Each structure stands twice: as C-alpha cells, then as structure tokens.
Image (cartoon, rainbow, N blue to C red; front, top):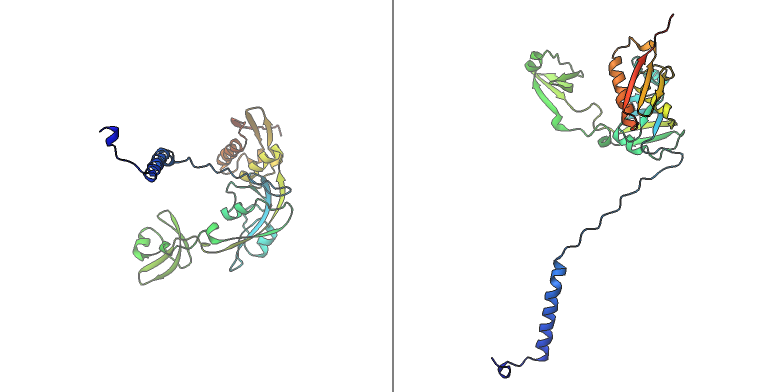
Length: 276
C-alpha cells in the first residue's frame, strides 16, 4: 500500500497508541517482583543490676500450685519442714540457674530477665507454660485383668508406670481401671516466690557451681581446679571416692563445663590419696 493509500489517523488515536506503547514498555518492570526487605534482628535488651539471659545466678525459690497453695518445689529447708514436704534426699539452699537454658520451668525461665538482684519477686506461670493443659485424651480406661497381667496392682491415687508412661489411677470398679496420663499439675497455674541471691561472674565460681549441681551436698571448695588453655583438671576430694553414681556425676560435670567454656577441649579428673 502506498503512502497515499494509508488511512488517516486522528490525533486522539495517535495518543492512545502512544499510551499503549508506553504501557507495554513498562510492564516488564512491573512484572518483576521486588525482593522482600529483610527485617532487622531485634537487639537483645540488657538490664543493669538485674538478670540477663545467659547469666549464672544462684536463686532461692518456692513454687506453689495457685488453686491449692501446695508446694511443688522449694529451696527453703525450714519451709519444707513446716509444710511437711521435706525430703531427706534433697539438698536445700540457693539453686544454680543458667538463664534461658531450661534449668527451671519454661514460663519461669522466660520471665527471669529483668528481675532485680537481691529483691523478692512473685511470678505467675500459666498452665500452658508450666506443666501443660489437661488433655482429656490422656484419661483412659483399661481392663483390670490387663494391668494385673503386667504385675500392676491398681489402687486409687497410686502413681504407676504403664508401658513406660507415668499415670495416676483415678478409679477402679467393674473390672475396669481409669488411669490419667496427664502430669499431676497439668492445667494448674503456678506461682513462684523467688530471690536472686548472687550473680556469678567469676570463672572459677561458675565452674564450682556446675560441679555443685552434680555433686550435691559436697563443699565445692574441696575440688581443686587447674586450667590451661585447652584443658581443665579437677581434683576430686576423697570424701566422694565411694559415692554412688560418681562416674555419672563426673561425666555430667565434664559435659557442662565443655558446653559453657568453649575455649576448653578437655576435662580431666584426678584423685590424690595422702598418707594418714
């Protein structure tokens, strides 16, 4: 077709054509998705004269079930005796807690940062962050004969182990036994009264606290600590030579120290016997 035969185009049609061309040119840019902006990491808050995550602290604490007031744990020997919950097999006194590492209930662990040193505090822990909510599916009925065949004598209120699971007998009758696999404190709010008595910052005191956690009732000052660049030697006092589970305790101490002192590669225990 010659130029003379080409149809005439109005100014409005020319403008529309230009707009379409511009749109077509911009579309590839529009189709390209922008990379999502990375959210900046939140800086961990650091507290002055108060507990921070990762701190080695010594803490006095008493936890009670909110509904009944019954003590679930305490570091206070006198209170334990008064309340009738004293346990001769336990060692009472301030307890080592490494904040954020699960040394206490999750809900309590999360609320420790910011707690002032040497100040009594009451902290409430909801059931979900303590021993969990009660699950109706964990309450089951088992034929009496099956339990008897496993050597289990079900008595109401008794705590049993059935197929590797802990359970409480809720009822017995008509050849059937109702057992509850929920934790005895499931569904309960726990209230703690606590006081941080010491913030342990000295390296040897931290090691001593880790040792004391495994060797209960032994003066940690009796252990001799000798540290080189990559190795820690621990002298074991003679009063624990014949203690039960000493090898398990020693292994636990070694693993704890290697975990919290990354510059160390080895922990060695030695014993010294002197002439009497």
